[in-house]
Amino acid sequence: MSVSVLRAMPQFAAGDDVAGAIAAAAQADGLALGSGDVVVIAQKIVSKAEGRTVDLADVTADPPALELAALTGRDPALARLIVDEAQSVMRATQQAIITRHRTGHVTANSGIDASNVEGGKVLLWPRDPDASARAIRAALPGRPAVIIADSLGRAWRQGTLGTAIGCAGIIATDDRRGQQDLFGRTLQATVVAIADAIAAFAVLAMGEGAEGTPVAIVRGAERWRTAEDGPGAAAIMRPVEGDLFP
Image (cartoon, rainbow, N blue to C red; front, side, top):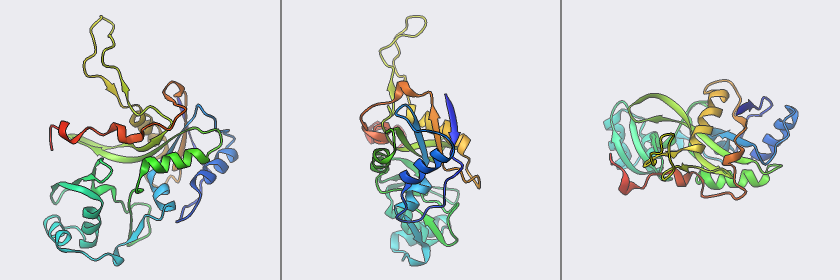
């Protein structure tokens, strides 16, 4: 597998055409998009294009937000957005606010981020990241697979990792249960997170700070590509009833 970042990407604002900008940047970089490619896109540019930037000065904290802010030392306006974007607040301390985002992903601060955003403003996730991935895929030449990625923390591990929060045209997970290993033993629990692995690979190349390369093209992943959009990153979510640490 190989990964190439697109160097000619613009800054994004509400209403901008993400697919058009990717197609133009790929052409400028001499990369013709094809059906075997996987286009990995940083969540931030999708959120910006979808108008998900919020000015904290425009947010009024309600009683639950004020309670969360007092408990955690967060800005009350930010606390209001964290609550609004969450199905539930799972753990709240001075160190972190862990929520189950309304999409089902477990995140810090409901995925809300202020990095690479103008001062006083924050960025929310797309309302439906899988729908966003499908729409971008439909508008891209060659209909490559699309993964929308964000950097998420992991339980009991230091550091963040690129993770698929939306995808289309890619097998999200590869269920290997029932197959055999080298010694003939039947695999009992092996389900490979394909979309997450590709997202992590691409985000490592894209960078996390001021690199200005929010899109990467991954090649060599054809065996996990699908002609249909598929169920998206929603298929990666472990059912709440199967959560050992609710």
